[in-house]
Length: 255
Image (cartoon, rainbow, N blue to C red):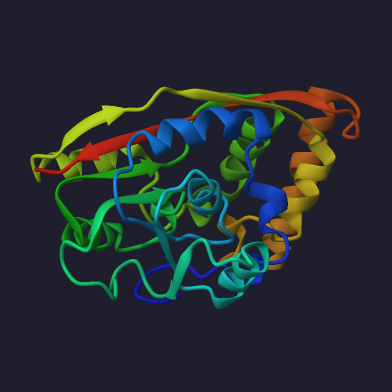
């Protein structure tokens, strides 16, 4: 944890197995984002390049920052031509002068930053007037991924709460105060087959950050309870089940 931001050092080896959207969804998402980005663009929490690398491949000038050296190392391995400029830095204390960028991207990261309002203040500082900030957080959905996630949180209670902004409505309220204009980008639905037992195993192994502050025995006990519940709901935990997840992005046009 640096400046209230949660480091993903421990997740570098498995992150891409758990957070990636389907190729079909990415084919729709990337053009939607590229249309919003004019000039040099900053991505905070760039991670292993899930968003930055496709943007760079579409000729966007991307700089990425992250507090996890391990995640940045993974990105560099995937980007031997250095199409994305990188810096080891905290989103709450960006190492850039004011008005450096024309746009910024925060993909699925503000929920990991305790002082997420400070991170927004930093984005506003480094993005030029009339620039755009693109933000993505959790969407709604149906299927085993969403249902199992909700059941785990029901069992674990407040202990599983995320430290930062958990809904885009909170971000909207904060940026409305700056007179930013809020636009919703075209929503997308990510469709895939999910094996319930495999997903529960990943949660139990600590592949998702909401478990990191919990004792191992609490996570194991919750996982065992969820398995029993999932067997009653889905039957075999080894049978793939269709899952749908809404991918929601907002554009915030700065004054």
